[in-house]
Amino acid sequence: MSKLELIIAEYVSNAEVHASKCEELITEQGLADALEYCQNHKIDPPQCSLTAKSSNAVNLRANAKRMLSEIKWWSRRLEIKAVQDFEMAKIKSGQTSSFISEEAYEYQQNKRVK
Image 1 (cartoon, rainbow, N blue to C red):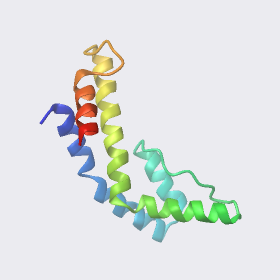
Image 2 (image 1 turned 90 degrees about the vertical axis):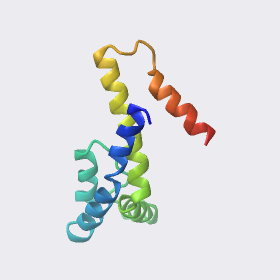
Image 3 (image 1 turned 90 degrees about the horizontal axis):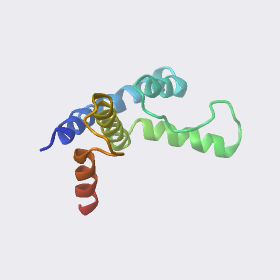
């Protein structure tokens, strides 16, 4: 297992914790706090209006609540974050001079094959 895969596994292992915390926040404090929780962990939250009254806005809020409480949603976002953090560390340390490190390229290629 490559260093990148280990980092991804470490990040994704926290998906259940984040999903549970968001579910708790939504139940006890509301959607706004769960969205803020995402931002505090540098994860882009689902896009929705907290104040709009249209049926579309209501649907988007319901979808956001569902997504924030799902382990699968968090797993995907944490995987993306792990790859981004890995690549940023490589760039800052000068270990890659191209658009993508060898490790990230191999990971993406192996992921496409599966």
